[in-house]
Amino acid sequence: MDLIPAWIDGVLEPVEKLSVHQRGLRHKAVSVFVLDGTRVLIQQRAAGKYHTPNLWANTCCTHPHWGEADLACANRRLAEELGVKGLDLTHQGEVSYRADVGGGLIEDEVVQVFTAQAPADLPLALNAQEVQAARWIALSDLLAEIAANEAAFTPWLRIYLAEHSAQIFGHAA
Image 1 (cartoon, one colour):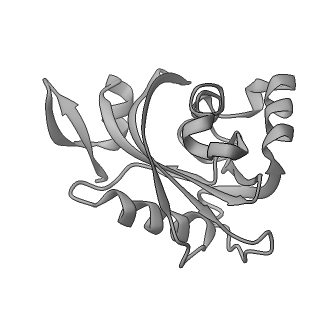
Image 2 (tube, rainbow, N blue to C red):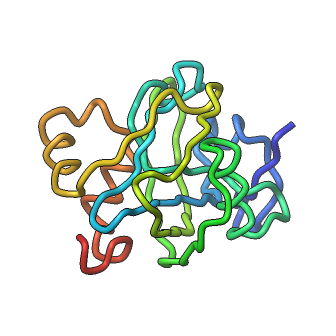
């Protein structure tokens, strides 16, 4: 059972991940944006994901295991989803959002956001259970693609770009 940190009556408790989303509980999360200058590495979620399958998202995102440090979680998930190790992650602060992700599931997240610079030829080893594709895209082009077809992108990526770009990307936003 995958237990993640969620708030119940104001107290952080270990709760099963699917239950957190079914109940719409506020919970901890981590998001990573790997950058090559003003280009960002995005991923298309695997078709078998229990929510938002086939949608494009930031480089990776997840929920820390109960008791897991945020930075350790970010590094773990980069390796698990994309086969990426050894990046120098920089904490960009905390953001919060609440979004309906379909199927009666809610993401209500307090997110620690990390970025890292990497070359465009960064070797990737996609975990097919998690990620079906990945690509580099200029932030300006990503914004244009979202404007043209927002349904192809996860709610959290749309929120990050619309509400938290300056915090996440700084001068590149």
